[in-house]
Length: 166
Image 1 (cartoon, rainbow, N blue to C red):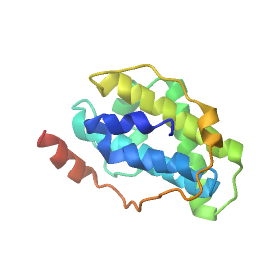
Image 2: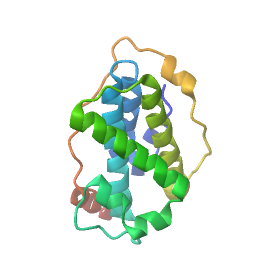
Image 3: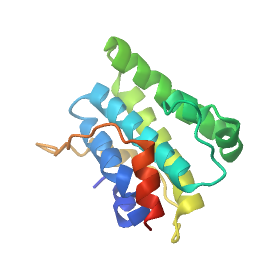
Image 4: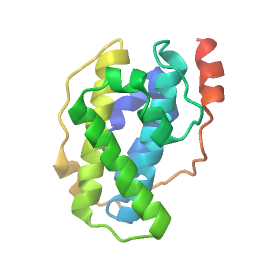
């Protein structure tokens, strides 16, 4: 069980639910991979937002940095949430760019920030919103062999096409 399992019950969140679950599953195996998957889940979720929210205008680039720095995006999230998103972006850039080692506590903060962002998404875009709290005790349960699926970059155009069909 993870803090992100509830996302699997929301069909609209299917493009990033498994990535978030795998991020949490990785924390006891490889904290750098946990942070990388957290970023991928965040980026996929933000691209999903752009694919369904007509107030968000896709910027000239589809990078995470470009997506979160638009005026439209910043108007949707408060400063605290934006700083949490930026933390995930920065620490993952550090990990991916330099292969810098991070601590368990930094990976846990990354997951907690991701959880808070997904709570925001759930509140704004879910039909059956339920308030939840991040449970750090779930991070302590070590599975002997976590299943970590492979993920590629999610194209914004693919999400837009997919969401137009629904």
